[in-house]
Image 1 (cartoon, rainbow, N blue to C red):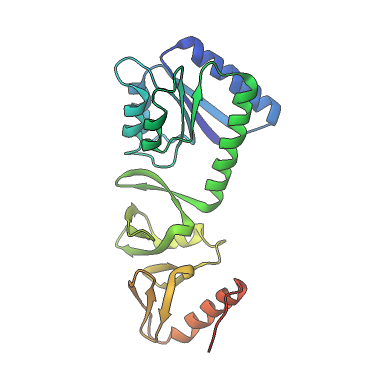
Image 2 (tube, rainbow, N blue to C red):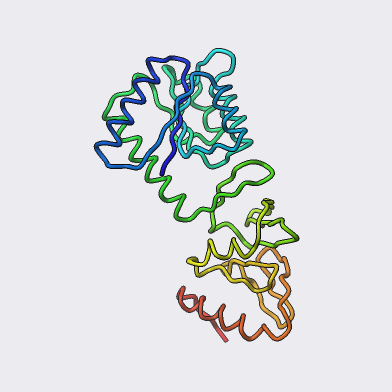
Length: 245
């Protein structure tokens, strides 16, 4: 199910958005739930509690706290939500990029344009779900792109996810559970009881360790080198990668 939130201090705008989304759900048979907020403080309170939305329609001009500053606070908890700003002016269009807004929608919102926008953002949500993993990290709820996950290490009950850009995200959990979640992705290999690696980032394999593109060294258990090399070669050939011996 896709979860949508509307935040606008104008009750008539909220009612209009609710009606438009009801029409969209009926016309497309989509499984969508939605919540409405008249105050950014109410919205932030729910997000701070851990409630996650896939899509957020956020008015920019609201009393007390505008939409841009609200979005900046939301990004501290959730880097994945698709934010669509609502406004009667293009004044803040450039600033919207600083919080990675999905779209900047001028009011009034017509049915046809709303349906097109929903089609676009729903498609993006589908793509994100197919290649993404949602984690509750110290920095908040984060959706990570699995293609950018280099490797994961577990220490005790803490998972450290090392991304290709050097960022390390920490989340509570077990490596067993993570492996089960990712078992349908052939590029992930559990090379050690404490490590799960993305084979796309393997730089070198020796009998002692796997060297990743980041130059991190992942230990290989005694006697497992041949098996790991075999699994890696099978994966590489399935991806039609070329080897020169």
